[in-house]
Length: 417
Image 1 (cartoon, helix red, strand yellow):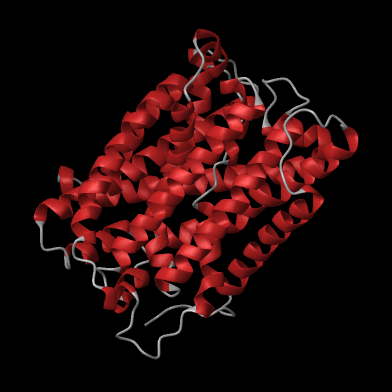
Image 2 (cartoon, rainbow, N blue to C red; image 1 turned 135 degrees about the vertical axis):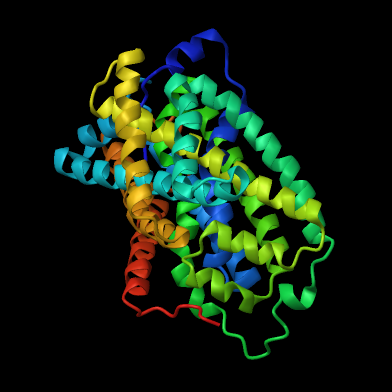
């Protein structure tokens, strides 16, 4: 996904100092859509405890890798993008690979959100999923086309709405959590550990905000404030994920995920399975509203990252004509592909996670490793852990990609009941 700084945000910084919660909401909104809606199906094999362990580990690694990007950026102008810094430090060939994976992940996430929104809205609007998807893109991509400040404001509104609907929906689910279902104690011979590895690509995608790091740095004007926004944003996302999994896995028996997984983990299938075990219509409506808000918030957040990244890559001007060109190459390709070739949500997220290891783990670690050899300033922002943490982040990324490839060819166990 992402980005540069096409600085509509540069003007925003001059207007007033942005709030910590605003930036954190952008980071959280980028994360939450994919993770909230993909993790239950992806974690059905590993179930509650191991799924929460996997996403917590992933959150820690992904926060550290985002801080590594901030450290690598610190010697550059605030306008410098992921593209610019990678090309300067690691060279053109590595940068081409990075750009391809950034665009692929951003594009496939937008593709997944557009497809899912159509499936959900077709029942609400009473029209085909294709028309619903088109309307979804035309209306809500306008915020991205307008400015970073518009995305900030709508992100705060959406996160607030998500929290309210989430609290209402989850409180209804939590009140009915069955410990036997939550712990899967009814299946005394259940196997869980073998399924954790295949879950990691979806977990990694659930914290894929790195395309927004350069925007956060430019938005706040320094690395320290941006790092706090990143930490708060990923912490918000982790908290929401844990509450969500606790509530879902405490109400929907493990075996009822089988038909959802058979349909590619599509959101409408998951919501249908949930509605079958939710007795309260109001709770069901709250969960449906939350799911739609989660898709919308991530669509806008990811869209901003891809938009800014492509604007910098193609050097489009920050005016109406230039932003319209950027809008076209950001949103039209995933929309067209969604209309022509829709497929499972979790499948799409898995592909995104495998490719995202390049620019969320490997490239940030390589950037900071080389930057530390060049820049000896120890007084400014520095990611913790030293070179040991750099190598650990690289290893995590490489292994996650390998796990996805093994899962694709059937060499990792797949939960089928």
